[in-house]
Length: 92
Image (cartoon, rainbow, N blue to C red; front, side, top):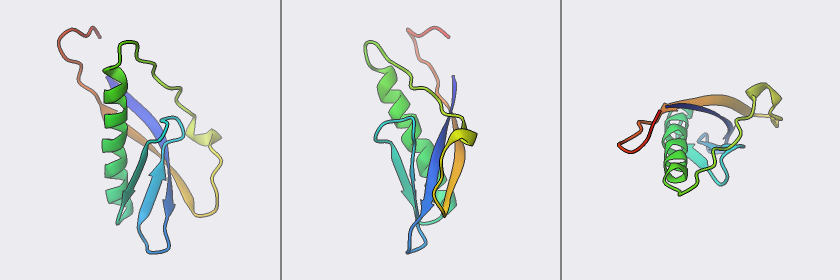
């Protein structure tokens, strides 16, 4: 399965980056550079989805349209895509 969720990235005063997923509750990322923060975003989103899919009755969150996000000055919106491999016992 392929998932794509938007993340809002904000540059900190020290030059590092932090991000937050508007659709994945409490899912955040950070990194010394934008590239590192986006890679962390991919890992954090994967972990969030992995935990949800392990629930007895998983509920996949709505995916916001990146064009509908409200950004503050200095923020950037990015789409984070990752593949989740389903294991035995799951049907695609």
